[in-house]
Each structure stands twice: as structure tokens, then as C-alpha cells.
Length: 285
Image (cartoon, rainbow, N blue to C red; front, side, top):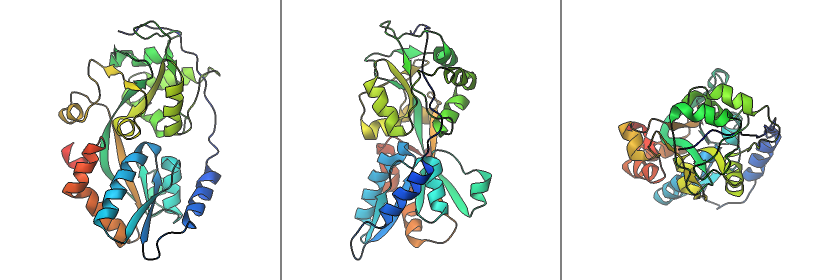
């Protein structure tokens, strides 16, 4: 069992990604492709990037003349904005649409849920009770079972994982706010940065979904919560209750190729791939 110790980490304020989002998408649109190929442009949350790449490759193989181009590092909000502006056809989002986004002729479809939890670079992170997680985060000095220090890495305030952590475990909103007061606490701007920093920092502790772990294979291990490690089987049966939902964002305007991709997601082949990439389909929740 983990013991309580001090955590000293630091919040970075602001992402400055808006301009980079638009520039990256525009550059993606002018890259050359096959003369007869139709391209679906997809971006959004980095947590779903590996999953969407796998789905896109299978969809392209089953749908001659269509390919998916993945635009990286946009985040949920950046992907949603790019769909709104017509720079993307689809976005994978780890949050629902805000009212103003839904009013901009956008539609969201919940298509997958992945187990959500905590991962560490510690080789044997052990187990923690869900009721103790907030105190573990906010404590002045927390250690792993081997008595090495815990090094928490935060996400920006605007990131959906920050909101999800706060909503998932009791007391986490206040605990995260307390940690942001420490200027030496690292903050990972993107999902991929989150893993890179966690691999590099001894004793790291970060939030993550099973799908991103399976797809990217970082040198990180899940922390068991209340004696249960994240798995699709336990999420499906309810013995592991913590999940991260993914939404497919599209324009309300008709797009037959987008419709075909949605049909593929709902097909037996699409459902098998979602399971293999660490996700429950909506039908199996």
C-alpha cells in the first residue's frame, strides 16, 4: 500500500495551440496524395490517435479509393474547432460538445469507452484505495511501496483529462488546485507529452486511458485501484468503474464518406478493432 508523502509539482499556464492547430491543418490539406483517392481528414484528442490510425487503416483497406489522414496534436477542442471551420471531416474528442459548439452545426456520437486510471514509471506501483487518491495527490510527501517519491504530472486546466480526474475521484478538484500552486510541478501539454514525461521522470504518476497505453506501449504500469487494474472485462462487468468516453465529432452537413466510416465503426469488424485497441463499444457498455 502507498504511504502519504509530499508532492511538489508545477502548473504551466496556457497552451498557445490555437494558431498551431490551424497552421497544422492547413499544411496537411496541401500535401500531395493519390490522384483518385478520397481523403477523410481526422484529428482531435491524442489519446485516440493510435486507435483512429488502426481504424483508419482497416477502413481504407475495406473501402478502396478512401484513406484517412490523421492530423496530430490538436486536442479535443482543436479538433472540434477544425471540424467547425471545415479543415477536418472528423474529430475524435474525449469530451462532449459545448452548447456553442453544438449550435455551430456540429454533431457528436459517443462511439467508445476505454478504462481510465493512473500509470507510473515505478516498476511496482502497487494498489491505492479510490477514497485515498485525492489525498495521495495533494499530500506534502507521498511514496511508492518501495519508499521512493511519487512525482505527479498534471495536465493543463483546459484539458479534458483534468476535468475527468476531478469528476472521477472524490476530492480531486481541490487536490489538483492545491498542486497547481507549486511552481515545480510539471504540466504535460498533450497526451503524448504526458507519456514522454512520465517515462523520463522516476516515480511519475499520470492519468491515462487503456487505449493509449495499448497503442503507444509506453514504459509505464497501471496502478491498481481498490485492488483492480484496468481491463475491458472488468469495465464491462462493472468491477472497474472508471472509463473515458470518446466521441466522434462531425458536421451536420451530409458527407457520404463520413457516413461510410460511421457504418464501419458500427460493423462487426469495427467493433472487433475497437475491442482490440482497448475500448468498449457503446453497445457493450
